[in-house]
Amino acid sequence: IASIPADGIGPEVISAGIQVLNKLASVLDEFEIHFDHFDWGSEAYKKTGKYIPDGGLDSLKHYDAILFGAVGDRGQESQLPRLTIDLFD
Image (cartoon, rainbow, N blue to C red; front, side, top):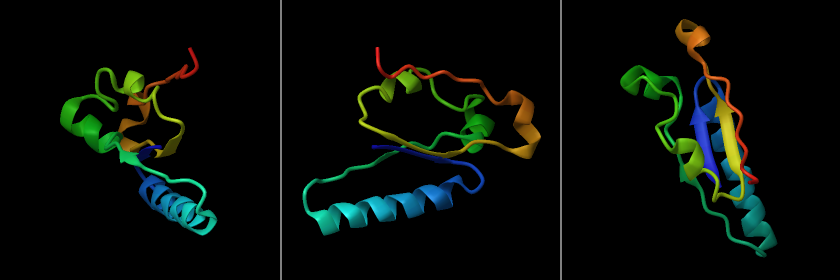
């Protein structure tokens, strides 16, 4: 699972979601779960000028799921990209 906490309440929500999913996997003992964490969001934008690095969306295509928090910074609202992610080519 790709984990993208991003901004605002996102890190808290994603952290709680990961705890719940790990507990579920532990209790059911029928599957394993693995998370790859991506540091994308307003802080990345401030450092690099991009919310998502080049090729970032393509790198998500091999994941079974994406856990996405929230993106936004009051000072950058007009800069937020409008994205369409077609993961099911």
